Length: 372
Image 1 (cartoon, rainbow, N blue to C red):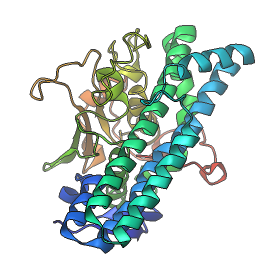
Image 2: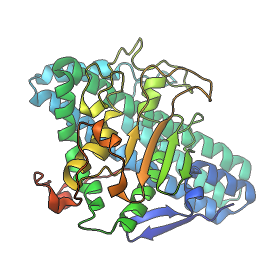
Image 3: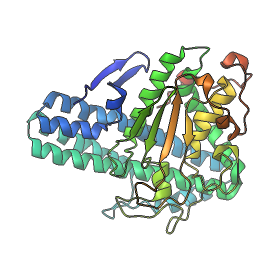
């Protein structure tokens, strides 16, 4: 098995999973299973503990997003009673597979209990029990993650229904600018060398998508290709936005644009959807966060995004869409076509000192959870 290490990273500022890029594309879930089957109990325990680090990035982020989305509805004219009714309607569609009413904190507690059971079976060197506990833990996390995504998406749909495309653009300024300040401002070549920035960008990208449990089996495995000038990551599907567009093949539920959900996709052409109708409202956050905000502040996108477009129901692996991220080894060499589709022009100078962007909020004071 390729070398995998859990260590503190000076560039990221916390512990991360280290190893070659070929190793990074293998899910932590799969690495745990491989180590259990090989009897490498110490490595299995380290990775089982780290799996929660990956999951908690997402869980913490959605706690912020859901509150911000509710707040945006209130600040945009909805009464407290209207926001409560919108939220209740969304949550009524998030029933758990066993019929229970959705409660994110209860499900997270169940996940943590199952993680402790996994660690106990690893410490006791019980491979059959450990693999069974691993599968249960991952499935509980998938259910938790996916219902948080649905919750955010239902609220986003309500925002577009009331305020149109401009409402989505305004909403993302509220939701994403603090996150950009916390996580993405470090990719300014005027402040940090790009070789350091690119390593950080790749590490948090791989970590986040493993945490989102990308892939058709929802294990967190993805495709990673390195070329002379860029890294390309592909997800089939992304566990958040693309599952929303494609539908949940694990629970056999439809795309969230179809009944019983009936939530919106982009209806108007705008820079935040690459001037393309049918892009899901959740997927648009990647365009805003990774393309628009850094272009306007640094002169280049930190990642180039190719999101899926609704509908995406083809189960043929050679025909269905894949979400794609591209990260360039030299950010100043991103082709101009990627600027044009967000309504920008490629500049001839790069770095924040060349742009008069509004001051960002203090990331240290915000205590943001951060994500890829």
